Image 1 (tube, rainbow over the protein chains, first blue to last red):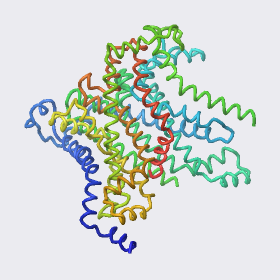
Image 2: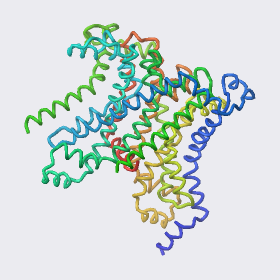
Image 3: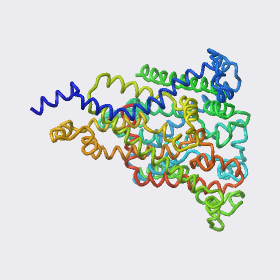
Image 4: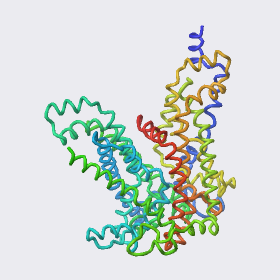
Length: 304
Length: 271
C-alpha cells in the first residue's frame, strides 16, 4: 500500500502537493525573478535608451536610441582603455593565480609534510577577509617611502618603486595583491582534485620508470583537467569583475592605467548618471564573460 | 630525502610568512601612535602600544554604528535567504513537477550573468519606492540566490525518500515534513550556506556603495573606503579600521572552517 501511495504522490500532484510547491518555491523564485531576472531584462532595455540624469528626474524625457550607446562605446577611448586594463588583469592574474594555487596544492599534498592543516589555514586566510580592508592594508604596504614591500626589496638591492603611482607598476601591483588574496580558494579545490587521483596510477608510473616531471605531465595534469577547467572559469569570471582593488588603491589611475570595466560602469552610471551608457557597458561585460567561458570549454574539449 | 624535506618546509614557511605578513603588520600598526607607521625603516612592533586609534574610530568617527549596520544586514540576509533557499532547494530535490529539470538548468546557467548587470535597474526600482539608503536596499537583492538553492538541492538529494514517506504516513503536512524532517537533516549544509552568505554580505562592497548614501547607513567596507579618502596619511587609524572589519569574519571562519571548506568542495563538484 505504501509503495503505490508513494508512486501516486510523485507522479500526480493532488491539490495539497501543488500548493506546497507554491509555498516552497514561491518566495525564492519570486525574489530571484523580481530582483534578478527583471533587472537583467530592464538593463538590456535601458541600454537602448538615453537614460541620463534628466530622465532620472522625469521619466518622459527617456528616448529610445537604438544601438547608439553601443556604437558610442566603440569610439570611446576610455572604454577601450578600461577594456584593455581589464584584459591585462584577467590574462595575467588569472593564470598566475591558477599556477600559484596548483603549486601550493602540490606542496601541501606531499606525503613528507606534517602540519598540513596549519599551512593550509594560513594560505587560506586572505580569501575570507574583507577585500576593501586588505586593499587598504596593501595600499600602505606599497607605500614608496614607508612601505614594507620596498623595505624588504631593499635587502635584495632593489631601488624603491612607486608601486601605485607609476603607470607601469600600478597594474602589476594590483595583480600581485589579487593573487595573494585569492589563490587559497583555488588551492583548496586543487587539493581535493589531487586527492581524487587514485594511487595505483602513480605506482604504475613509478614501476615503468617515469621521473617526477613525467608523472606530473602524464598523470597529474590530465587527471586534474576538469578541476583546472572549473578553477579557470570561476577565477576568470570573478576577475573580469575587478572593482574594489583599483577603487581603493589607485582610483583607476595613474593615467587611467588601472581603470576597470566595472569601475567605468560605476562612474558612468552612478557618478554621472549616464545610465543608458552604463547599462551598455554592463552588457559588454556580460558578453565578454559569456564568450570567454565558451572559449575555455572549447579549449578544454579540443585538448582532450 | 632529508634535504628534500627541509627544502619543502622552508618553501611552505616562506609562503606562510608572505600570506600572513600583511595581517601581522596591520594588527601591529593599529596599536601604534599617530605617525609611527610612517617611518623608515618600517616598524613591525609598536614602540608604545596604544588603543588610541580604536578609541578615535569608535568615539569620534562612530564606527560602531557601521559595525552594527554590517552585523544587522549580514545576519538578517543570512536568516532570510537560508529560509527561502532551503525551501526551494528541498522542492527541487524531492518534488516532481513539469519542467523541473529545465527550470533548474535555466537557473544554473543564469549564474553566469554578473550581478553588475542588475545594479542599474535595481537602483532605479528601489529609488522609485523610496528604499535607497535603507536596510531594505541591501536585503532585497539578497533574499534568495541560485547558488544557495543549488547547494541545498545537492545535499537534499541524498535524503532517503522513505523518511519523507514515513512522515507523510504519520499525517505530517508538507511544511511539517520540511521543518521537522528536512531541516534537521540538512543542518550541515545550512551551516555551510550560512557562513557563505554571512561572509559574502559582510565583505560586499559595490552594491552597498551604490545603495547606501549616508554615513550612518554605511556598512563597514563602505565606511572604510570613505574614511580612506580623508585619512590617506593615517595608516595607524586605517589599520585599526581594517582590523575591526576583518576580525569578525576571521572569527566566524576559524570557528566553522570545516563547513566553509566543504562548501567550496560542493560548489566545485558539479561545475
